[in-house]
Length: 242
Image (cartoon, rainbow, N blue to C red; front, side):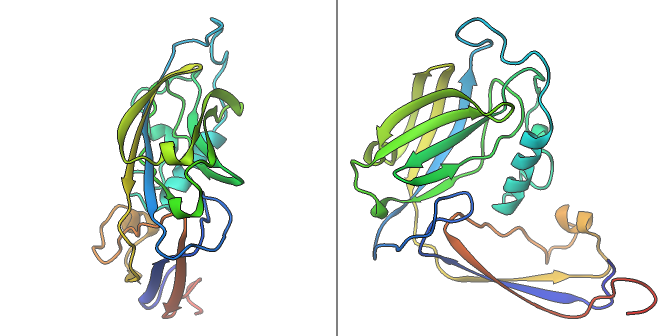
C-alpha cells in the first residue's frame, strides 16, 4: 500500500481496570491496589527428560516460535520485534522443548510466549499482575510448558503473596526444569500517555520496523492497558487511481 499523504496515528494509553491480552479476564480494580511486574528471566532444563528419554525425536513445527514473535511485537518490545521467536535463541536445538511459562491465580491465567526450542530459555516479556485483586493466600500455580506438544515440563504451587514478594530469586528442582529465575518489582503508577506515529509514504513497513524514521517508535503496552487509536490522513491503495 502506498500512502499519497502522510497520516498521523495517535494512541492514548492508560492503565485499565483489568487484565487483558496475555493476562486474565477484565474485572473491577480496587482503588489504590498495587500492580507488580513479574519476570521469569531464564530457566535451565535438563538435557533429557527425568526418565532418560529424549525431549523430542524430531523438530517441532513453526507455530510455537511464530507465536513468540507475534506476542513480542504486540507488547511493544523492540528486541523481539516481528522476528520469529527462534531467532532469539543463539543455538536452537531442534529436538529440545520450546519452553514458556503460565501462571494461574484463582480463575485468571497469565502467560509468557515461547521463544524457540532451547534448553536455556531467556525471556524478556514481563507480566503485570494487580496484587490488590487477590488475597495474599490465593493459590497460584507456576507451570513451565512445552509449546511443541503442550506437555508440562514442571510446575510449582505457591500463593500470590509468596509469588509477588519483591526481589530476585531462583526456584530449583521443578520436575524436569533444573532452575527458574524470577524477579518481582512493584510497578509505578502508569499515567495516560499520548503517542503520535507518522506514517510517511517514503518508508516501507520494514523501514519503520528497522527504525529508519525517528518519528516511528515502539509503544510499550502491558496486559491491563487500554489503547485508543485515532487516525487522520489519506492513503492511495493502488496507483494511479486514489
